[in-house]
Length: 184
Ligand code: IMP
Ligand code: MG
Image 1 (spheres, helix red, strand yellow):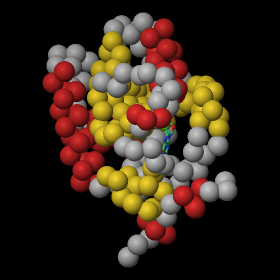
Image 2 (cartoon, rainbow, N blue to C red):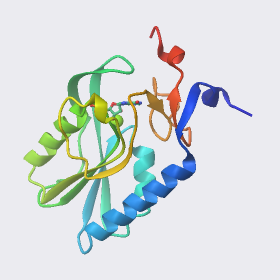
Image 3 (spheres, protein in one colour):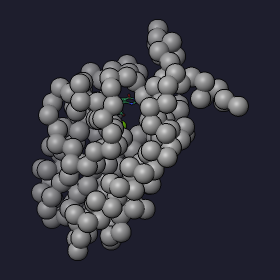
Image 4 (cartoon, rainbow, N blue to C red):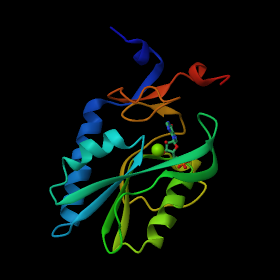
C-alpha cells in the first residue's frame, strides 16, 4: 500500500538498491584513495545526514565526523544565493584531510561558500563527495570529486532530501509532484 508520503511522489528516480550500490562503490573508492591517511568527514546538515551515515560504513579508515549547517535564503525550491553558516564545525581542521559530504549540488552556491570557509582554515586537503548533481542549474563551478548520480532539473525528495522539512525518510529519491509545492 502506498503511504501518503509515497503518493506525493510522481516518479522514483533512484531506488533504494541503486542508491545502496552507489554508496558502497563511493565508500570503497574513498577508502582506496585515502589509504594510510586519516579523514575528517564533514556532513552538510540536514540533507546529507542519511547519505553520510551509510557512506562512512563503507569507508574502512580511521575517521572523525563533524557537521556544518548552512542556511540559504529563498523559497522552498529555489535558493537566492545568500548563504550563511548556522552551525560551525566543532573540530579544528588545520592540517587535516577533509571530505565534505553533500546531498545535492544544484546552483553550487552553498558548496562554493563552504569551500571558501574550509580552505581558509588551512586543511591538508579538501574534496567533495555529493550523492546527486544537477549540472544544468550550476551558477558557480565546483569540483565534485566523488559523485553519485547526475539528475535532471527536477525537485527531488527522499534519502535525506526534504521539501518543507518532510520526505527525508523516504528510502528512495523521487520527484515530488509539482502541485505539492505549487502556490507555496
Ligand atoms: P545549491 O546551493 O543551489 O547548490 O543548493 C544546494 C542545497 O539546496 C542542497 O544542499 C539542498 O539542501 C537544496 N536542494 C537543491 N536541490 C534540491 C532538490 O531537488 N531537493 C531538495 N533539496 C534541494
Ligand atoms: Mg543540503
